[in-house]
Each structure stands twice: as C-alpha cells, then as structure tokens.
Amino acid sequence: MAKLSPEQINILSVRAYYDNKTFTNTTEMTNLLKYESQHFRCKVQLEISECIADRCWSIGLVQACDRMYLENRYGHSGSSFWEFHPLKSGRHKMVNDSDGRQYPFYSLTSSKFEIRRGVVSDSLVSLTYEDHFYPTVAWELPYYGGAKLTDVIRKQDFWVWLVAIKRASSRSASCDVFNAKHDEVFILKTMRWRYGLHMTFDPHQPIGKRLQRIYDVQEEQPIILETNRPLPLSALSPPHCNAAQSLIWYPNNPTDKPKLLVPPKQIIVPWETWTNDMAPGRSLSVKKPDQCKLVGEWAHDTEIGIDVNPTIKTGSATRTWKPAPPVDTTTISTSRSVRTPSRPRG
Image (cartoon, rainbow, N blue to C red):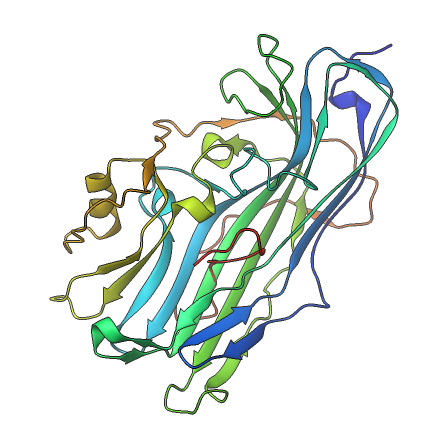
C-alpha cells in the first residue's frame, strides 16, 4: 500500500465565487450605521485514495490578506481607518485571515480535514467556508466636534490556498499546532478574490434616508490561478486579521493629533515602534493596552510551499494573478472590518 503523498489527493472540483443570493444590506440606527456585504464562498471536493499515513497530515483552506483599505470618511473633518500594522508598515507581506484557533486554516471545522497516522481508507472530502463583512459605523464623532459620516470606502484583497501539510516526523501524533520550520507545506491550488464597496451618505437627512448611493459592482470575479503562488510565512502564522486590526482617527487638520479608537490585540513589534509606524510624525502617544500581546515579527517573510499544481477536474476558468494597482480613494474602494458571526471585526 502506498504512503500518503500529494499524489493520493485528487482534486475533483474547486469553486470560488460571490453568492448572488446575497447583496449589500444597510440598517440605519439612531447612533450607528450597520451594513452587511455580499458573501464570498469557497468550496472544494477532494478524493483521497487508500494509503498509509506515516505522519499526521492536515488538508485545508488558508486565507490571507495582502491589501487593506477601509475608510470611514467624515466630510472635510477627517477619516477613521481600520488598518493592519504588518501591511501598513511593510514589515510583513500578508496577514493570516483565520479565527486564530488553529493556524493557518480559515476555521476549525469545515475548512480543514485531519489525517492521523495509520491506514487511510478511500475518502471523499468536502472543504468549504464563507466570508462577508458586517461592521457598524458611528454617524457622528463626539470627540471631534460632532463630525458626520459621509462615505464608507473599502478595498481588500485576499489570497486563498488549498494546502496539504505534512507534519514533522519528530512531532507527536497531534495535528493541532503548525510548525513553520519543520512541517512540509504542499500547495494544491491558489485562488484570489478582491472586494470593493463605496457608500455615500447625506448626514443632514433623517435616519432611514441618509444612504445616497451604493457602488458595489465587483471589477472581477474570484479567480483560480493557473500557476500556484507560494505562501509567505506571515500568511501561516499570528497575528490574524481580527487581532492585528486597529481603528485610528486621522483628522485632516495637520495640527490635530490622531486618536486610537480601537487598539490591536496582537502586535509584531514593541508598542513604541507600533505607534511610530502607524502615525509617523503625528504623535500617536497612547499607553499600551493590557490585552495587547507581542507575537513577534518575521524578520524575513520568506515564501514557502511545494507546488503540486494538480489537474483540476472542473469547468471553472483559471487565470494567472496580477498585482493590484495602487488604491485610488476617489474611486470605488474597499476593505474589511467585520465578518462571519463568530469573528466580528471593527
């Protein structure tokens, strides 16, 4: 009987798409705007041939963000931004986008499949997850003269990998902890999706009538790449997006100081370095929150992964990836702050 290897993992189908049954939905409340975006879905079917696993394996979906732009604009007064320090500072190439319970996989349940040592029977495996955003935004800012919300602009880009991780032989039978140094990562398929949204508001209208326009037509559908892309170490390890994000108010008046509204839960550099990176030259002086933990920086955010590049038995179109153009805040943009109920952001 053959040993388990990527050759025993047959990809039957891969789908990455926006759910056309979902759409941008807004709720105007007395003090807050709530909105929910269209849903992104990823579904994979695999067939594993009978074999023997001499190590533990984990097969699953990994999502990471490499571009984040989320602006809540308050007219000419300024804007609050949700930001990822690892990306803004350029210290990491990506931010892992998981629930943080079992790196690097998107979630603990439906997006991964574990194989223990021993005989592996013929298996049909389904992997799936959905992602969407549902943040709340304040209509007015009492700490800045009652500045009123006029725009929500967001742009965020994601990579998705279908990977098989072969655990290091020196490890125990557990598959619970990813070891970037010793585990082998096989890349079975790479996907890419980008989401854009721009909403405009008239703050002088009564609640329920403030929304003026929604620009949420996506420039492209999610794509399945012809050529796999390796994963940077930052896509596989802490911090994850929900822990790395911060919300900072940046006034347009250069003599006014930025204000940290929501601190990050995890940082990759000491707090003083973090504040300098986020608002260079603008004196973002605030005490480090007790709940904020230092998780460490990849000094060299090396890209890893063995490209398996199997034949996909599916009708989905495949394409090579192209770097995104620079963010233009005058056009439709996007970014993400909150999403599935178990993992709210911003």
